[in-house]
Image (tube, rainbow, N blue to C red; front, side, top):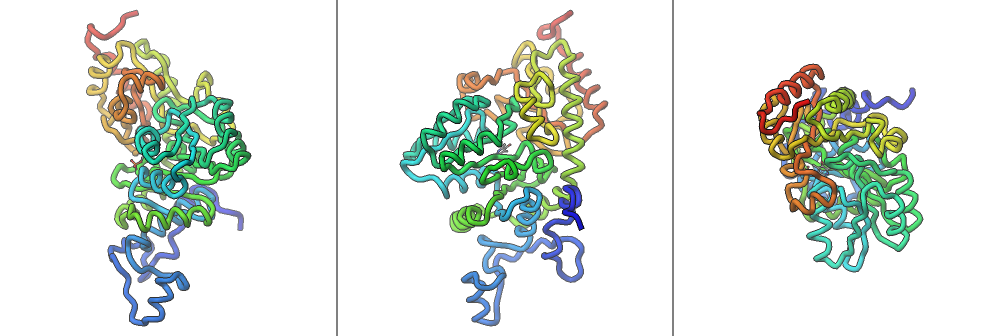
Length: 399
Ligand SMILES: *Cc1c(COP(=O)(O)O)cnc(C)c1O
């Protein structure tokens, strides 16, 4: 038979090895430890000579089923998991970076990731080079000077900037650097960075993978040789994914393809609709032909994703009046759920930054991040329309 397609994989991958008692669904194994009557068998499992589980901080069957599913969806040889997306990022960087090392990355990484680069790594004598997102020449120049890690994210948060993955992977390889990418925004439905030459793919499973805003988790996919090193760092340092969260993420991932297809479609329609509104200054979405990363996105993505952002006339005053009026949107810091979620970038992705830091990466105080849900898009459009129509005279522009 042919290799199954992505919807089939997201439903069936990583399930059958973990079923017991004829159950058709992966059980949530809440046991912290796993017992053995036979002392030799226990020793063999504990020393890795035989498959099995010893202690929940190291491995757990429900957690392994989640790892299998994301590994197969990303087309990776191996995968491991973490308590959160940030744990995936910090544990991966902690495994591969040491005092005296140099890492090249972009200015527009996720807010928490950016804090690792600006606050924590420099304290460990690790040199961090923050390049202009989308400036491929600058990144290539910095990578060629020598670095241990090239760290990427595309599309980025919140202005959905695009970086050419294949081109950057080549640059990293040529310099002998490990190329790591955060694929949270695209998901494996829209983009498989391993196929484009990167070494390791990171996910905040909290977002689109789980898709229901009810579980935190993170994942790392790549060659076994690299993933095992990070797994070892994680099992000792303890940022383990909880079995209940693993179960919720597994259940969410069964509908990944359906949800992402709908979110791609809704985001595209919302982006086009917003462009037609008087009160909207600019709309950022890689699916729009005028987006600076559109051509690269077209080349490396199968869909443009569920995330977009837009800035409104009148700045934060307009945001203050507009967002409370929306009926079908959670005003929250999350993204990637079945419900539409909105929030100003200054209170969500970049809350840790100062207004000056935000301005430096082109984030206006009136920028709104919009995570398209799977609602009927006509309802979302009407909702935006009524919210804009109800703006008071003081902030609205006429004509
Ligand atoms: C949310 C997010 C993270 C962090 O994930 P958590 O699960 O919240 O720790 C990392 N990268 C991106 C792109 C994100 O959106």
